[in-house]
Image (cartoon, rainbow, N blue to C red; front, side, top):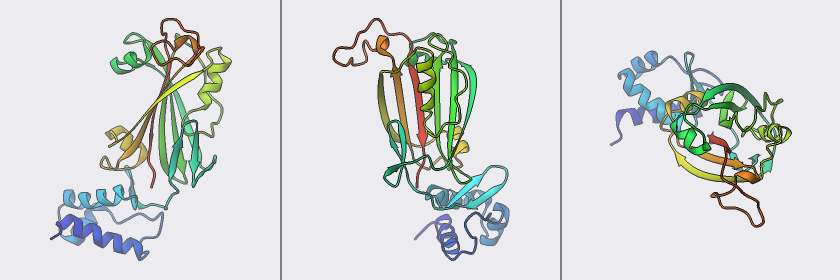
Length: 239
């Protein structure tokens, strides 16, 4: 027999499918739904988390839960976004730039000391009002001070590469690591998803020709002891 929160989720799915709440409309407040189903608020939230994980609703913090517009799957293909099998700039990309200090993990990845200054670029890709991808790009200030990119069609922050090239730090090699995992609380908050919703995490580590030693040099590539590469941790969420 299904748990009570699963039964509530089934009923909410039925109501959404019947257009009781059209796409984009806010569901009744959690306290109202909890009273309607005669359960505690924590139990009701477990039901809503199931629907969030399925992509049926999204929680907008401080506002409420909304029926999501079915979105096209966002597929990651190295340096570009692909929707429905083709590259496109569809959707809005917002970005922010801040100066941060390298923590232990970033210092290890970038080959710099803890506390070294980094330029952090944060890119958020949207489809309609819904955030769909999150990318953070870190550039050691000892490598370059690229400044602020122009409006970027890529939700992965690929415009930073052009800025690096202009600074004389041409990217010639990128290593990628792709994993599936649950988002951190901060990532879930940014993407308006549950912490139980799996995300695709792509970590890219880019270097120029002088930074290739010890990272799998390509034939004919010159190298000397590794300096500071560029690090691109990417999180994406798709239906």
